[in-house]
Amino acid sequence: MKTNMPHLFRSEAEAAAGSFGPSVLSVGNFDGVHRGHQELFRRLHNWSREHGGRPSVLTFDPHPSRVVAPTRAPRLLSTLAERARRMGEHGIEQLLALPFTLEFAKLSPEEFVERVIVRAAGARLVVVGDNFCFGHKQAGNVSTLRSLGGRFGFKTEIVSAVTYRGRAVSSTAVRALIDAGDVAAASRLLTRPYALHGQVVSGRGVGHKQTVPTLNLATAAEVLPRHGVYVTRVRDAATERAWPAVTNIGVRPTFDDAPDAVSIESFILAGYTEPAPEHIVVDFLEFLREERKFSDPAALRQQILRDAGRAQAFHRRAGKWIGAAKFTRKR
Image (cartoon, rainbow, N blue to C red; front, side):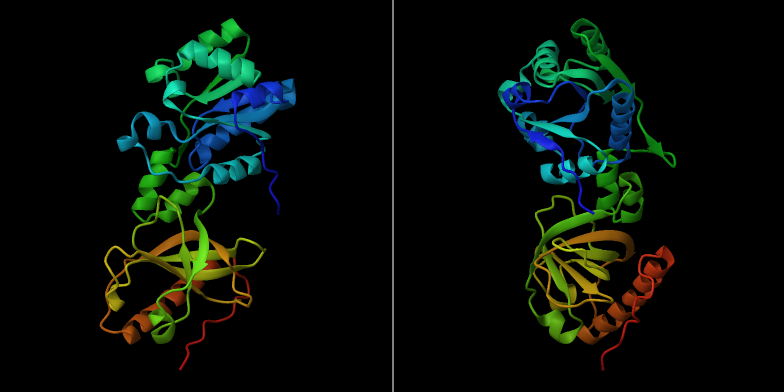
């Protein structure tokens, strides 16, 4: 199903001269577009239905930390394009993505509100989380925003931190879960599987000849699940095709690959047909086991067969792949 992408504005002048306002607006980085962000979007829609204004988001590119504190900048879960797509899925109609520079970082909280929120975005309502800070050296907080809203004529709504099953939802928490390989828990905070996007590339060929065929992914993603074997779903980025899979992330120790040469190899369990996809999306569903070195490729192949069986059982339980063909051992 095609997502309605938000109308993208890339400068204050473009927003002010265009039709951005009147808006109902949320402000932040929105890395990963997780449950907490989705709650902000829900509040925007509630207000929009009752009072009007287009559901909109103000974000920054690059991430502010990469400008003011690059050594402490987080690895990002999503690109701007990926964030925009997810926002569109949650009904955001407009996205103002401003370039973040050292000059922009020097704006006082009052200057930021007057220039960006009022003049450029034409906000009637601003919805933010309770830890929201803004302006030079993050001098402004939610109390500052509320006060400035009263002065400049927009409403504010402050949303408490969202928790899920006792865990606070944040981009930091999602990142930590993925780093640990707990992709199932990460998916619950995201409300969808964590996914890697990229181009299909040729592997070394050793695995293809001595074990089983794979699709090899080259990705620019900054956050990779920990090395190991996962139950996944592989999707052709250009079509509706999708396949149950087992994916290995690691250095292929059985083949003595270079220790820093990380590969992402997905073995398609069922239903694969030509033509081969050029770009794929790999959804990470469940951690199966750690990567380890086997005595020879034959032993690795037997383990892949066991992994495939466990992955097929997972897909059957999840109801995702009804009627999937049985995995056939080649002789």
